[in-house]
Amino acid sequence: MRNIIIIDAFSTGYNYVEDVVRRGYNPIIMNTRQEKESEVVGYREIYKTLYHRPLIIDEQESYEETVKLAKSYDPVIIVPGSETAVVLATRLAYDLGLPGNDVKYLDAMTKKDAMHNALKDAGIRYIHGEMVSSVEEALSFCRDNGFETAVVKPTQSAGSQGIFLCDNMDEVSHAVSALLTMKDIYGRPIEKVLVQERIFGTEYIVNTMSCKGVHRLNSVFRYKKEKTPEGGYIYDYCESIDSLEPGHNRLVEYALKVADAIHYRYGSIHGEYMVDQKGPVLIEVNCRPMGATMPGEFLDMITGQHETDSSLDCYLDPEKFRIDAAKPYRHFRKSYVKIVIVPKDMEVDDHPIWEVAKRLRSTYKIAAGDPDGVRYYPKTRDLESNGGVIYMVHDDKEVVESDIKILRQVEREYFELLLNDGTSRRWVKDTGVKPVSPEDIIKEYGCCGAILVAADEYREIEGAQCITPDSVGDAHKGFDYVVIGYGESLLQMRETDCLKLIFDTMDLARQGGKVIIPKSTYSYLSYGREGAESLMYIKGLMVEVPVTGDDRWVAGTDVGL
Image (tube, rainbow, N blue to C red; front, top):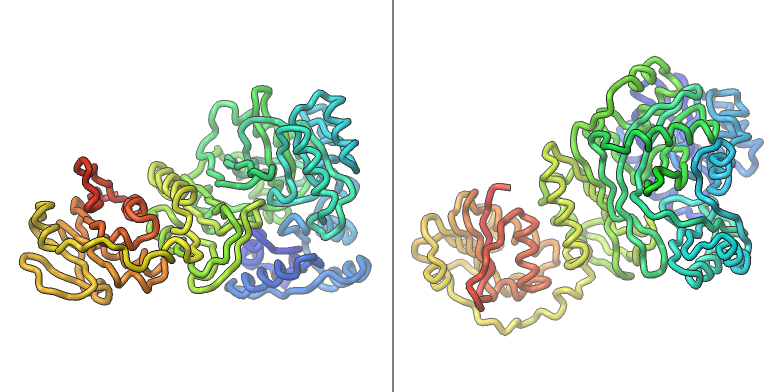
């Protein structure tokens, strides 16, 4: 069987393995030498989950030995799976005479200063910047150009690593000083950094494909990023652009000109662009598939195709490339990818994010820590230091937009409902809240019809069915009123188990039914009353307006969302 070598099949690039098999070829993964061995180990675990297990080989000590190794497998093509692979994949393909890109344009494809110089030479808009090796040079460049703000970054990076958005010259000084003590994505000491004019606008992803120097649009996404107090640039979410809006054609045309400017001939470009009052301008090109470890099936649901598969058309099937280039731009479904922002360094021993996310109607996949494991999470400073990724897609645009709103609010205000280090409920021992009897709640609230009471211990309740934590699964959905009266039984539960119990009990209300959580129960929950309301919010219940001055319970109605 003919072979295709994938260099660093990391992130979304892992999809290449199955795509290559579907084309009738044999996938071989070559790992480059990584500064962070843990990254390679992590992706080796991903490879084990694939249906087809690829052969895995390693880059050799010398380039000559690596060429010899690659040649021994007689590859049809060699493709980069991630940012760390672009240089080696381009060089190997070029030296083995395979379809690919010219190595003399590698700098324009991989170095942030060189790519903007290529745009300048091509006569299209670029961001003015300069390479500097000291704070003094950086400040002098900013003064000479009248910049009051700036962006400082390494020439080579990925996932917003080492990028600083500077609001003043003190922040420029700090950013340059910090970067000159760091290493780049290849593990090499950073000796020079790029200082650029800062552009303010809306940031987009434009993914394009190139076949023999002809380019076509693949997909468009819009970024939402946040500036950190330290000046970093972190991802919040990205959303798919379902159809081109006014002004997007100009963005796409510009992106195709960028591909020409860097002399790109084969494969995928993940381009990041800013659009301001002057129009689009390149932030950077990444000459490999889009990141964020996007599942191929997830992308298929959105666009009807996915990047790694379409990228193979560029090399193997020019006619399919031509046909796809002529198709109108349409997305089948709305999608978001939510990157969980960790607000502080945390030793997490519980991951309730799994329970929360799976209750949302648009959740396709959750990529987060082991629900039963212990893990240290640093404060989010770039794409790599996130608390997990939630992939969301739905036929109904309003559903997925509602879900992303819920997730972002929980993340900002009730974070330990996502990642929990025990502090949110550690103080709960005896709440001091006197329990209200189920009979009194039923009477005072005016419950009627089919009534369910959930309690720590079973008891006979006239006109109602009673369940306990260990018998929730025995009850059938269809109650007009569900009174969740758990108390001390919640004390010994992990956050995940507590949320699962509450959510499962809420599930027993019929559409139009009501859920009531008395104070004697919500006092045991993380964030108390607001925590109970948040769980109803996540479940799609409509929280009811309380009686003035009455905090005896929180009530919500299942409106069938």
